Image (cartoon, rainbow, N blue to C red):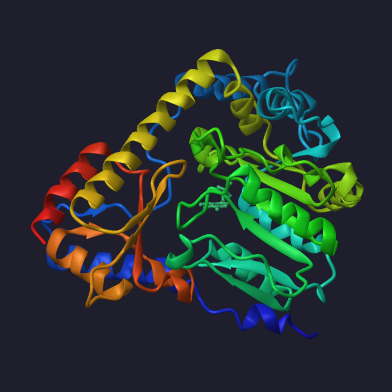
Length: 386
Ligand code: PLP
């Protein structure tokens, strides 16, 4: 037996463990402190009632002989796949068939599993700083990584790879920098992929935060993208499903990968739970739409309060519009971690040090808008005294 040494050599998840350790140590030393957690990228508002009721009904169905169900289709129930197309794609002029939509238990699993479609000798281009899953998944497969640094001098927009990249992970709206691409900017990536016979894995987990009409919600708004892009989406941040678990991945037939992905899923995945798919379906009802929009509006407004407040104090800030993340340059004399410590020790605020997302994140911290409004306002008051 030979183990996967690539996996063995992966470092532990230093970033969030270290944040948790430092926060715990502070809280133990100051049990009376009201620590404000503005670092975490997890939703905080409860699910809209119509979604909860749909899941309750689904559980009740399973308790009754007449309505009981066993395994569902591996790729998801047809009613949900059709609803995804009708609500998320057709209104944007995108034509898909239900067998191109694969319901999953969230974007995290699909982002990792899609790697299996490609030979390990493929090169992978990854934006840096980045959500860690792309890097770790590529390292587990032993792939060569082409880094695409996103720097302040370019407003955190990546340059196209100067060498040939076979697989390209793109994430827009971006975690952690909160940047977005316009249609014209995204079209350059689609052109690159078509010219170089690359595949783009487009992580659209934060699509629901887009408000600017120039910014696409889906990569398939770009002509020809259906030949070179797989899109990964999730109900996690759109509808507050981080605990429920449901998402979907679009693999158009024109990529030549749809049948392979279906084959892979049918072998290794027995489908997302019936209950979570019923919950996801309820997000598309008028009450579901109203409920999730109300929650999204709350986060969007929190993002604005946070980014405006930081700017008013003289901080250099990116994101916060069309995205739930605010990327903030640390004051002179600090690095990511020393500013994290300063905020924790002086203001009892937890943020996420940018260096944890890659070397180009050094000198920045990430704030999250998935926080309580009163915590954000209190955080801004405390930071004024810094
Ligand atoms: N993609 C990005 C960019 C994320 O930030 C996250 C979660 O924070 C995910 C994917 C994973 O989402 P899911 O809950 O659907 O697995």
